[in-house]
Amino acid sequence: MVARHGAAATRAAAWFGAGPDADDVVQEAFVKAWQALDRFRDGAPFRPWLVRIVANQTRNTVRGRGRRDALALRALDLRDGPDPLLDVVAAERQRRLADALATLRRPERDVVVCRWLLGLSESETATALGIPAGTAKSRASRALARLRTVLTDLEETHDRA
Image 1 (tube, rainbow, N blue to C red):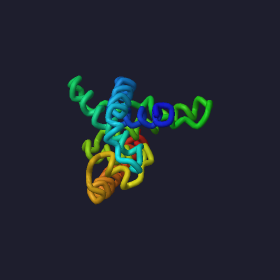
Image 2 (cartoon, one colour):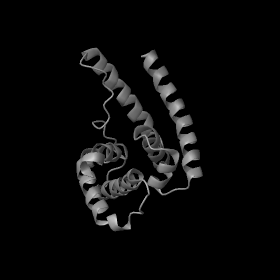
Image 3 (cartoon, rainbow, N blue to C red):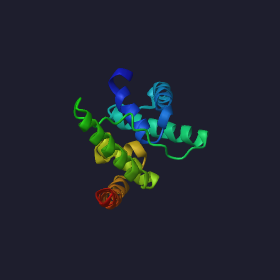
Image 4 (cartoon, rainbow, N blue to C red):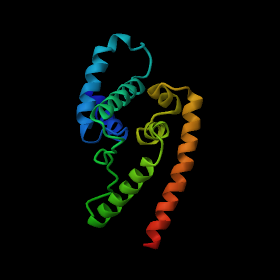
């Protein structure tokens, strides 16, 4: 279970805001998943169920430490190769994406994380977040519109500098 889903769970924890506690969140989420395995519906997709546990554990951890929504960039690797210039460009892209994601409200950011950063389908996203499919779809639409605006503004600001 850990070998197959560990990397995705770590990415999820990081994008949901676990920050430096991502590894601890994932470890605790796997323990909870193992303990709740008897309640897992036979035939249901495992990954959305695990992502939901990771999301809930992340919220508990962040709430418990009193910090708000710290995005961890270490789980996202946009680097295209060993070229130092590409590394600089990728790091800048990461920063801009993190800045843009930070402007979203948590429910919208959670949908973006599930759909596009973790690659879950619309129905898997709804299952992972415990919301109706229509809600996931509308949140995704609002989030993408807001991200477009924010990223365009960031790009224009960068071009003027």
